[in-house]
Image (cartoon, rainbow over all chains, first blue to last red; front, side, top):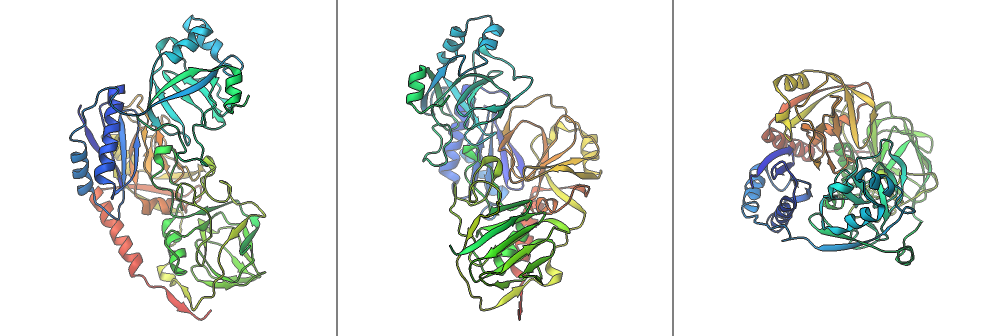
Length: 227
Length: 313
């Protein structure tokens, strides 16, 4: 895989792993994160993995660009990965229904399939956590089956509830907190995606794999979900 | 309680330490003081730990009542400051007694003032930092800007001496700045003409500037990119969205985003940008990464060599 280390700023480099995203790229980035953490922890402040890149922020006071570049070349020299090689597999329960997922109908209509099929297809595959950002705990998961892909709403909602399971294009996500949002809502997940009071504060991290599993209304409420 | 009680919170007063580092993997941004130089001087004049929690007072309008005998200092943006009705100087430490009122008027030059107390404010860290990021509801007392009635705990202190920073060592906050830029990210997606235009034009600071980013207005810059995957954004990154108007991303930026970037402003200059009011003008100057590091060490050495003077007060 061709690697490209570019300057990002006075204390940051960005590594590009090609221009496309895929489970293999994601797994490779995850290995890069592990290598850099293991070999350069003294001088690294933050690592921000994303779809096909990794932002590396280092400590200006403890290092210099020459050392960091050389360290990165070393850490990135051996990144053999297969698709499933790294990352935890996390299962998230979802209460799919028109009550909890008001846009299920729209997606079904778009794909010319039934609502039950939308729910079935969303659960059929493993998703990769490609990136975390936008808001604390917001994990971008990809990629959903083309049959249930749907563009963002033309008018975003003022209020998307915490736990909302949503689709935008071929990405899916669980809203970690109530916020405005333009993604299509298909259900609610009772698992908190970000809880500052808890350690760890997130159930997933970039590079992990996620599966969704349907639960009914009672189970959702029993697990602490709110309607 | 020993500390201060907020009588008037001002327009935007935030508890800040040097920032939240190592939490980008959770989607948490850095936060921290926009003007690190003024922040660092505030703590240094009081002999505080360099990461001690202070107040970042944007635009002024803060008033606090002391419930403790201690020492304070105010640095950064200029404005009228008073203890118990008597005007005090900035960049100089003062004793304040229990029951006395500390008042800060509206900023008349610059935007961000820093109020530090001896020993720092005693604020429990959240993800390793007390820095308040309102958008994330993280840090500070309740993840929000100060409200009337908030209590700011700190320890009593009786200073052995008072210090001030000599006038010639204090920064000036005008209405223009040159922002030095390390080119990077998608710089190759901007052709020669765009680079020339960007580094040879004047941009105005708009009203739509805040702790997330400073939106500028001026010559339109175009990139050849039609869409890109979201990627990590570092401090100072200059994002050029489709309208061609640059946004300099600051301390409370989102950690990932999908707009092309031409490079990043060095932190010493984002500190100067943060002190500019809307309507101020900025220019960009391209420097090498090596120059950026040289500047960092020069500024650091200058900070350490500059000695505050003792005062009778």
